[in-house]
Image (cartoon, rainbow, N blue to C red; front, side):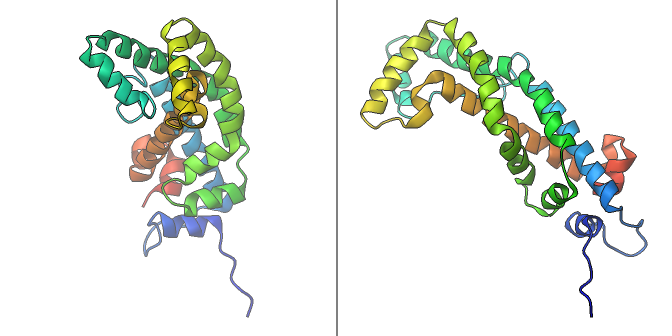
Length: 226
């Protein structure tokens, strides 16, 4: 007997709880892939809009960029010596740089969504909660990092504390207290900006999965709805 072919629509029905008696027929592979594209594009645009504005990072504890590694301990000492404002200025500057960089991601994220194949869609539907994050990271993390870095450099250059960060972080790295990109404020902020972007995209995708009908899209409701 020939093995029965499992379609993307069938996978979506099983993974998203749609298989059952009396429910609408499962979507075709083409419809399911279109639904995935629509969901991801909606999530990407929402994530960029949320983060790419004032306090998008700074005001969100889920993605707020803090000082790395042992510099947190150094910041505590500064606070004890009455230099809290210096710590606050540096943290604010890091988050403002990320907020300035994120809008540049919109076009690249949308391009990645439009390139999704049926195979990509199948992996996203049948994957875990981090399947969307993995997809976007694989497609966009390296090129987005190259696009973000000059913007982050421009923003951090406006703050004198950026140079001080690099000096202190360089010494800490020499002692093995900080590793890799954490020793450079521009690369550290760029990495954290990307991390935050993928976190928010994942959150948007989970919202759509929980309430596809609430999106107002008939296609999303059909693909992701119960």
